[in-house]
Length: 89
Image (cartoon, rainbow, N blue to C red; front, side, top):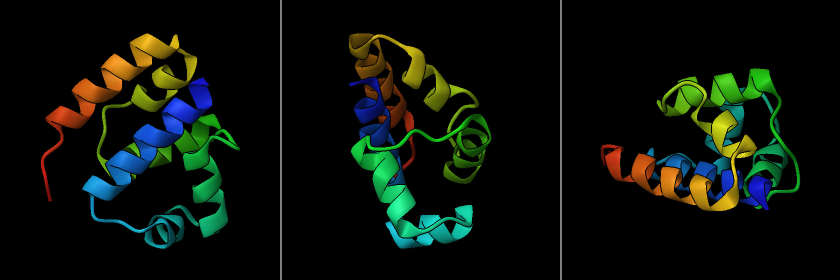
């Protein structure tokens, strides 16, 4: 369940940045299927990929990693707070 929460958060942030899965995949140098797998909770990004995602998406360092390691309810609350603070582009 934690992975799915990270994926939903990742998808929300990507959409707020007006990026398609294909556009994000290109910036990450991975396939769009990989991004889709992250977002659907089928695959976890490793530490290096989390750092790259955070840099590209402009979120606080370690936020996605923390979500990945946190209890679900705490992760949901943090994700909502983080999304509420993102500027709309």
